[in-house]
Length: 494
Ligand code: NAD
Image: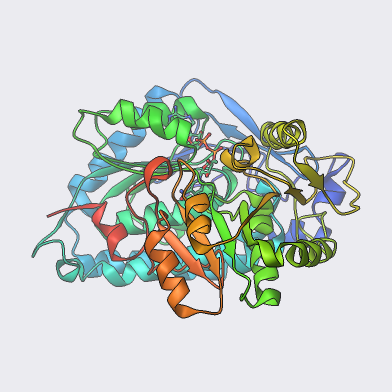
């Protein structure tokens, strides 16, 4: 097995440098091993970029460097796609599904065995609270591999014809908000269906995708079946445009999604786009309010609000709006912001300076347009990227904070009087990824779910995910589904 790190054995996380001590408690350093530099994962080996370019990935909670990462140029992308093509033609595309399943089960089990390592690494690189990476990201990533392992030998019963075939090489580009989980969402169905993959993680969070590459080695996955090319947008663009790619799967912003749509148009490549959102979380006056308050908090503050389906527009029925606002503020006042590696932390660091600037800019627009900003008394650490949990009241539909995706811990509160008005306001967005409904009445849930233009509608809960359940959007939130039987369709031809 080749060493994932370059230059030396995978060593303990750097211990020198101010800020590190804060960012990684001593026991965490023993759990996650970070090499000083990482290569690209191509053909089952870690290799340097051909032109030797690198970038630094940092810990957003301390701004300390974590590691140097190879930046793949077009020649590297070409090499990765060729490697994936070779593996598809020689091994993976011909392998019986029951054999492919064994590898997926193996990867799932190794993910479980190395769960603590993955969780710590994810929190270090992304800034998310360890409680979330430990209890959500990593278990769900393993669950995706388990679930799709189960499909690998049953594809002829999935409803896509008697002998569905894989497409070939999948080029997959993912964002930074759930780095490991998004990698699992992409790789597991593609591999189960018999495709080989070239994955491009986000430039601010490459580490868990590289550890997943190491897991592929550990599982004995044939070389070239999974390749990981790290780099920024230009690396992603080179992958998407590569003529050897048969299927493009993208999760990220609507803006980049539109560029990809233009690149892929007319090429015959199959495409799925999982893009942004501006979800409405609708609370009726008969809702179980204690539960609803928890659901509102989870809906917008989970993962610092870096969630495509975040319930960032709260629609509250006017008769309970004051009460909900007051109780919500009391609850938000109890949230703990700080060290992502502290198990008691509720809100971690914002993933990058760029994202923090975007959140600040949109919040300032909220002030300028006349909404009222509220945050609890909250001391922010001196180093790193932080934004306090924030609620805007007095928001009108025309405000930018009610229309644009903030992708941060910022909630815009609007009110409504009737269910019809709730639906009109909820659907007043170019997006259509998710929505929430809080009410005691089952009939009202169904009535709302039929009218809300969103790919996922949660009732009396929020942000629930399951590998068996398809996830995806309408309109500017993209097209195609990930997860469940529907997610497999994107990787098969009849
Ligand atoms: P982004 O679009 O800036 O980047 C996403 C990925 O695309 C990164 O790996 C980036 O390097 C790459 N990229 C950038 N430019 C590219 C180009 N021209 N061609 C190909 N690849 C390119 O998005 P982000 O800021 O990393 O992620 C946040 C966005 O992702 C939000 O809008 C969020 O809603 C969305 N998102 C959607 C889902 C979903 O399932 N719908 C899930 C998570 C995140």
